[in-house]
Image: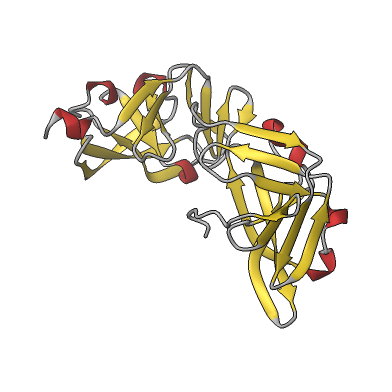
Length: 250
């Protein structure tokens, strides 16, 4: 394996205190987390094995990575709970910086904290930014030629790598056309979202609208406001129809 191939995985040391809990017990507490970009979109935490409080019990399984080498799989055990196969370590990795670190399956743990604040889905990328800015721009949203929102009081959310999102007061949205759904998603930068479908005539547009009722601190300006996938609706900004952006949500 060439150095160029191994270099596709980027590793950087973070400065935040990271704590992870399972079944109410502390699994790991470290001020030396590592960001590892296994994928280009967002990082994963790898945590020093020396900072683990829970037991890591090998299960004899190996997972091969072209860039990281042979990964040894472990159960994570506390006195009150077990997460089977939830830890991975590369003790002989060609990337020396990974050898004394452990990767935990995010969803197998109960809680993750950066400092004293909970974090969801994955670590916050130190190179991503959220700006939620109040605006007086005129935003209109149409679906199938029917106006479903009209507002002069948006909060525009600018998030690295995504199109601008227009968060609108519910009083400026045709809430009579919205039907709540069971979909719930989480975002490390915004928090937990709930969704509506939009009913226009006989057409149902599934999970097209969402809100963060109690967003994380960085995104508090969007609390209780609603946004539409501008990939899937007609959005007019100050009277001009925007081109629909192309994203994984298109």
